[in-house]
Image (cartoon, rainbow, N blue to C red; front, side, top):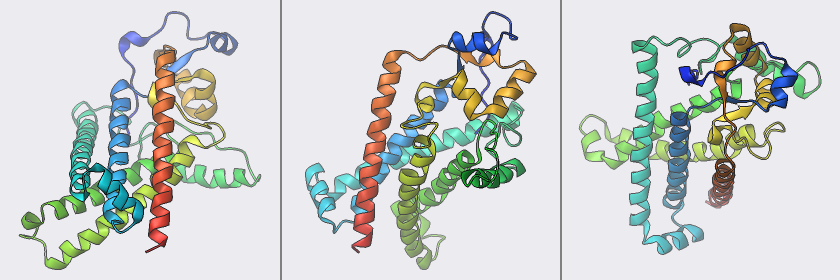
Length: 296
């Protein structure tokens, strides 16, 4: 959500006014995500895959594949245990993220956390970019020029944020039903079962279709956007995908401070394996979800 501020010792040597041709010839790379942000995302997508992979057999327990899966891992009790384990880990990651946002925004007074070009908060430019993108799709206008975060990235972020609150609360209300029954009426406890189930399905459908398409299957990212794994992107990619951020940093004299090292080969290969594995698992779960849902 907040803007990325590189370390002070990350500034390169040389003049910030070097020509674009020289910089591209040198193969410059720029940091987009810190190591902590990448680790947090890794926890997010692994636990989400775990929740989806265990929640679907519980939701469609009468399906043939769900029964086979349960018999192979020790029964539905074992599936429920791993579902709860992934939920706790993801909850801790979410609370850490929220704490980090408010610490940086309210205590350290970091600019751009809650509003501005580097924030994940939506603004009027996102609305104009959305309609501009639609016009560009049908050839009625130029392609919008994006800042640090495009409108669909903000939509993805807030969809996950909303899902964490709704699915998380309903899940814990089911888990600790005797405690919540002290201050919730009976109909509310019945409602959380439906909410948790349907919102969970919606989250799976959203992540494994819309998010995958927006992030990895767009023409300028296909077959995979590696930046969330490596943390860096080439200068050409940076300038092409986020031209307004590139121009803003160059105009402020902050572009050079974002320069980073080219990702190591082992990291790129590992990222490809991890990313394609996650996408493959997600697509399999999407197919199982749709097939089980429409057979009910």
